[in-house]
Image 1 (cartoon, one colour):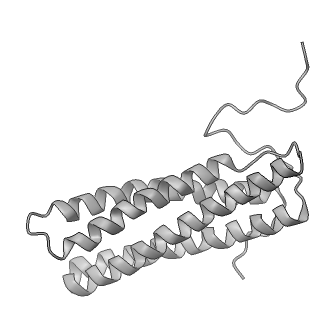
Image 2 (cartoon, one colour; image 1 turned 180 degrees about the vertical axis):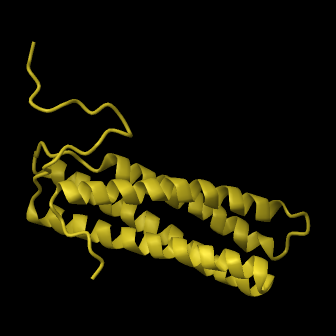
Length: 169
C-alpha cells in the first residue's frame, strides 16, 4: 500500500494544509481573491446598512440601496469564485501538488448564485403587493450571506497558508 505524505482531504470543511506552495501567477491570483473577499465584506456592510435604512428611514431609498449593495455583494462573490477557478487551473497546468482552493471557490460561487436570486427578488419588491418578493429576497440573501461568509473565511485561510498578505491596503 502506498504511504501518503499528506493527510487526505475529508471534505468541504477540512482545513487548508499549510504551507501551500504556488507559482508566482497563482500567488498573484490569490492576492486578487483576497481583494475580492474584502470587497465582499464591504458589500455585506453596505447591504446591512441598506436593510437598516429600509426599515427605519425610508423603504424606497432603502430598496434602491439594497438593489445596489446586493448587486455589489453578488459581483464580488462571483469575482472571488472565478478567481479561485483560475488559481485551480494554474495549479493543474503546472502539475503542482498544491492544494487547490475548492471550498473557497464553491462557497463563493454558491453565494454569488444565491445573491443573483436575492438581487432578482429585491428588484421585484418595488411592484410586488403580496410581500412574497421581500420574503424571497431575505431568504436568498440570508443563505448567500452564510455561504459568502464561509467563502471569505476559506479564502483568507487559503491565502494565509500560501503566506499571502491579507491586508486590504
